[in-house]
Amino acid sequence: MNNWSAQQLQRYDDCVAFAQSELNHEVRERDLEHRFDSQLWQKCANFGVFGWCMPEEYGGSGFDLETSILMLEGIGYGCRDNGLTLGLNGQIWSVQEPLLMFGTEQQKKKYLSGLCSGTLRAAHGMTELESGSDAFSLQSSAAKVSDGYLLNGEKHYVGMAPFADIALVFAKTNPDAGNWGISAFIVESGFDGFSASSPVQKMGVRSNPVGSIKLNDCFVPEENRLGPEGIGVSMFNQSMDWERGLIFAGHIGSMARQLDQCIEYAKNRNQFGQPIGKFQAVSHRIVDMKGRLEHSRMLLYRVASLKQNGVSASMEAAMAKLYIAESFVDNSLDAIRIHGALGYMSDYEVERDLRDAMGGVIYSGTSDIQKNIIANILGL
Image (cartoon, rainbow, N blue to C red; front, top):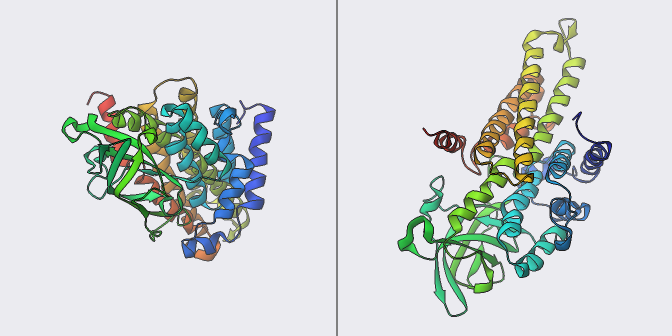
């Protein structure tokens, strides 16, 4: 962090301190109970998290993108709940940024200010049971009617669905146009025909609730269509640069905290008359963890720099998503090995990082899909 200004570093430290003091209440219990804590979400909103990279006229702070990412990394370092930090980043990059990019002035004033303040919570509805990695083969439909659309379909594996006030939903407005017949809509949970499931249980990031959204002749006013008809694919691809490239800002902080914890343990745990950090089997694992962390950081901030300057970052975002997701898994495995039996015990809260990290190789496009994207851009 040698290139950061004193003010930026102070903001990072403030975020770490806030997260450590305010966001670590009953982390293990929330994990065991698959419990979303709305009070913690609101604390983050009150601290300004959702508005850091949003313009002031829509309730944001107007910070530059790189500073915002640094602050989100600080939240990830201080907060031991990876589910919460994933949820925060999910709303910012998969819903707020598309709204900022494609929304009308009316839409931005109506929804962005509420999302920044925490009075509104948002979900992103793209995935369906038969269209996971093949996202654009979705079957949800949006039929044009007087003054709006009737939406029908079901979205699955939707983060924040059980507690969302609005959802960014993709549906086909012109099935005969293929990919160019997909449009996006801002659907309020109070609209007739909208329903969300209870949270489903999952392996990790359990405090980030995931569920399904059903649309049964759900009437959506025309003013709630996001962008023109038929640009859903373009919108999704552009927004994925933001989501894939930046959603792991909190996880970078987790990896840094994880590394510091392992170093401290390796210095103080003695075996065979010396600290275990003196054994190459342990020290080399820690070196590998440090290397993965720093490479992950460089990829994350490379995407942030490009997006801040208005440059397309499709390849860089895919590379960041691929490398950071796999690195968090590898570092979490190393952390367990370094801690031995303690790392395997739930009470010590080391194994939870591995369970949380595994989701990263699946959501926002699997690691294999990221490789496909990169290969395609390379002309293969």
